[in-house]
Every structure is written in structure tokens, then in C-alpha cells.
Image 1: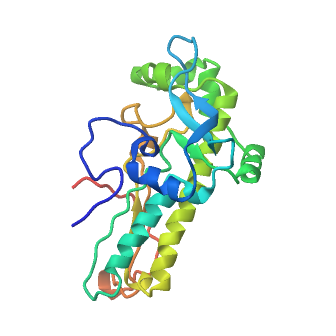
Image 2: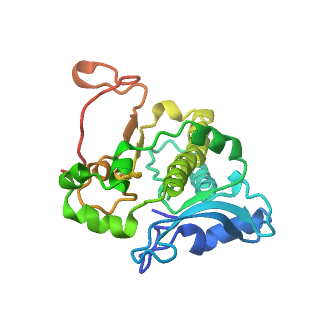
Image 3: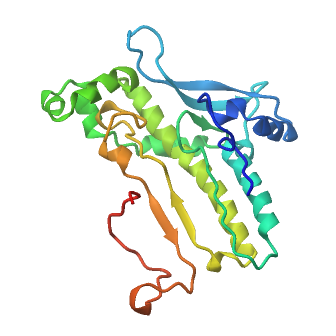
Length: 261
């Protein structure tokens, strides 16, 4: 059994992997990128109302004010590592299990160059959550419906500026598109090698995202429904059969499921 990436050794700290993953640093060097910097940053609320709060990521450029290519992002690096690992499985008749843990779309966000037009489209069609507007305006009814822990959490992780909320929502959506490209690379490899139809492919996540609902972001307000809800997509093998021998390929099942055993 082998592993790679940010989770292959015990942690005694938390940091976005693109800051301290030596493998990623080498990956950037192979693409002639000597570091990067954020030129547009997103920050949360400061509890003291003085200065910036939590760093939530933003838009990046390569050192020297050069464009930062999408193929040099951390999702692209993990996809490259995954494809190298899949090559090692190719050609064997033995079944294999392969797990890819992408950091994205978790914040802090890391938005590369080349997405400017997509960003403009998103901003033009952005619909802000009503619950954020009510919270920001001090709506008393909303306050009565939310547990006190949300108010405490909002003090440190709340977003109160309209521009910051817009930036967060747009950056979150752009990060999904960056990740989607790299997931597509892996699935395309499986199809090109004739393995896709025989594979069970599962896509899920470890938690949801409040995404500015009620003025909150990330995952830390305990038992928030949006944090508890996670995606679960299963692409079954093409010859897999369910109950009564009915083929499951191409079937949609609209049912709540739980990871709890």
C-alpha cells in the first residue's frame, strides 16, 4: 500500500498544502514557476473590527507578476500524481482500489489566471442569499431562529461586507471549476484505457459549506445543516445489478443516505 499528497503523514499543524508540500514546490519548478503571490485577497471579519480577519484565499499570480496557469494549480498536481499511480495499476488483471484526496474546493481559495471571463459571468448572475442580507441588516426574526453558537462563530468567521460576500461566492464556484477539470482528466484516462465501465467511482466530501448563508462561511458552526450535507455520487460498473437483478447503470436514486454505521 502506498500514499502520496498532503495526508500521507501525521499532521501537527494545518496549512494550505500549496504552502508546505515539497512535492508541489518541485512541481512548480518543473513548470518554471518560481513561487506565487496573492494580488487579490479575501478576508473575513476581524473580531476587533480593526484590520483584516481570517485569510480566505483569493486570486494568484506567479512571481514577477506573471499569469499563473491552471495546469500548475494544486488540483493539477494531485491529478498528475494520481495518473502516475493509475499507470502502475494498468495492465494487471487484479482489482484495484484507488483513492484521491483533493484539498479543493476547501478555502482558502486559490484562483489562477485565465478565468477572468468566467468570473465576470458569475458576478453578473450572482444571487445573494436572503439569509445573509437579513443577518447583515440585523433582522430580529432571523436572530431568534439561530442558536447562540452561530452568533459566536459569526464574530470570527462572519462576512459582513457585500463585496467580500460576492468575492467568496465567486471564488468558491471558480474553485469547483478548477477541480472539475482535473477530475475530468482522471475519468478520461479511465475511459481511454477501457477501465471506466468496469469501475465503481465514488465522489464525496468530508463536510459541507455554509457559503454565506446566515452570514457564515466554512464549516465550524456546529450541526449546521449545510455542513452536515455532503455530496455522494456513485458511478456503478456497467454490469452491476441491484435488487431483483435490475441493472443499476444509469439509474438515479433520490434518497437520503448516511455515512453513520
